[in-house]
Image 1 (cartoon, rainbow over the protein chains, first blue to last red):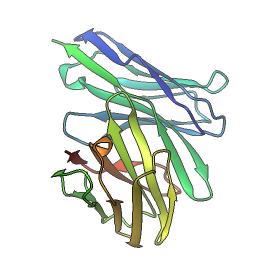
Image 2 (spheres, rainbow over the protein chains, first blue to last red; image 1 turned 90 degrees about the vertical axis):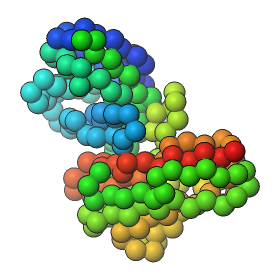
Image 3 (tube, helix red, strand yellow; image 1 turned 30 degrees about the vertical axis):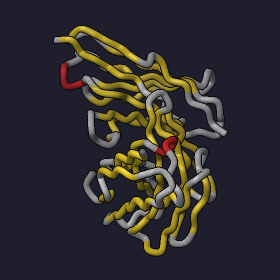
Length: 114
Length: 112
């Protein structure tokens, strides 16, 4: 099955700096790569996603890049703010007859220091 | 968490007792999932459903069973809870044509 690795496990940045979280995946059948943000005591919330036919996607201060050849994808947050502090999860998804299967990384705890 | 309700949100139980967690959705999505979240392990799939009465195992299914008798409800049962099943359990839903996974608020289970 799919194996998703995520680094780093913890990340601290000064407010206004950029943060980068990297993930690798193993299964070339994966074709959809979402990123989730989880705040304390809540369920993960989708913040951005990218499909395998796209190399980069941006949404205001957040961007995701995908390198299919190398099987890695990254989340970039620019101009970080204290409210960006949370745990971020990457995931890789493939489509099967019985639906979409999602495999998650182990998470990155991001702290933005004011 | 709009459209997905998990119950109970918190439960403390003793080893050996049965436990059932309920996930209810109002989105009429075809696919439903149960994940557990543990420190250092991220989110791991327990079981999923691809339709009424259609379910399959995930990567950590031992000790768990599921049932889906209606589109809107997906139940996760621990027949005899163990301390290793202490965790936060998340239900999620998705549609085939739009593979976005939407999560519930989670159910925190403590097995003493």
